[in-house]
Structure formats: structure tokens, C-alpha cells
Image 1 (cartoon, rainbow, N blue to C red):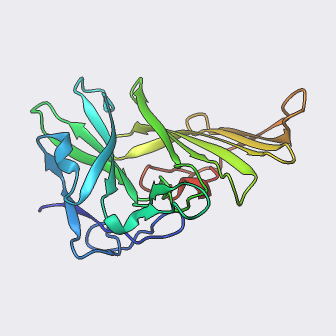
Image 2: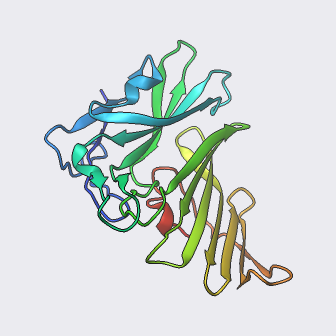
Length: 239
């Protein structure tokens, strides 16, 4: 039986939501919905028509000695290329949504769609915020994905959100998460670090001026598990 993952995009303030169907589907604002197949002989073939590749990292994610790929693709809809030269903030910015695609290469050289996320990277939806996507890398078999929030108007808060994933044979499982939020006016700082392998987390609240951090340790509740596909909007995820 053939398998395909169907994406479509609904513009929203920070992300776009998922809708149940025969394959994971999205409400489509344009006339040409697309499908990403289960396999491809080149990782670039996972980039759908009317979308573009904006970043790619390679490395061995499943330990089989072959080179796997993680791609970030972005819709290329001219309606979401925003001209704001007469407004406050950036003159131009790309508000098109992005999708993270994980493709594992098998011994025959064929790539298999392993996991994806339609919403972990928030949309660059406002001219007064920086692009939420910072970077990603593959290190020692793990995927590291980093997202940031910074606004030059409308909010004093800035934050970083760092995710670490590892292939568990079925999906890209979240094994580590760190977040830090700073209020630039008051100096308030909130931090959290979660290790899903040891099932422990630590949280801290204080001031930038504090001489030391006051960490509070706790256990991660039993049954808590997240994957790349299940996390949702990075800005809303708390671990």
C-alpha cells in the first residue's frame, strides 16, 4: 500500500495547525496542494513544487553508516513575501511557513521519509520580530534544532528554545530540551532544562543580576514522550 504525507498551509500568527486525514494534511491556501512521497533517490526530491529548500544538514541519524538528511523547506507563495518599507520594523520579510523533513538513507541509496514537523518553526509573521529559525546541526547521531524569539517592538521578552532529537526506530524522539527567557526591562530570567533519557528536569527563575542560579529539580512524569511531529509550535512548548 502506498504511503504519502500531504501538507497544506494555513497562515496564522505564529504557526499552522494540523488536520486529520488519510495522511497528515493541512488546510491549503493555494490552488496546488502537494504530496511528499515515502521515498526518493535524492534528498532534494522531497522539496515539493512551489516550495524551496532553505536549509539542510547531513549526518548519520540511525547508525547504519549512511548519510541521512534533514531539510527545512519553505512555501514560495508571493502573497507571503511581505513589503513593509512604509511601516515599522523590517522593510521586507518572508512570512511563508516552513516544514522540517527528516529523510533516512538506506544501503541502496534510496531516502525514506522518517519524520516531519509542519509547525515546530514558528512563522516569521511580523515585521518587528527576528526570524524565529536560528540553526540546526547533526552531532553524534542527534539532531539539534534551535529557535529564538526577539522583538524590537511589542515585547520586552526574548527567548531561546533548543531541541535535541534522536531516531528511535519509529520517529525522531525528543531527548533533550532547553529554554531561556529574559525580560530586557526588568532583568527577569526563566530557564528550564529537560533530559528525557534520565527523566529529570531543572527549572530556575531569578534576575540576570543574581550571583547564582537557583535551580529546582523534578522528575519528568512517567509516560511523557515527544517527537518532532508532536511538539507543535516551539514557542508554545514547555517541556
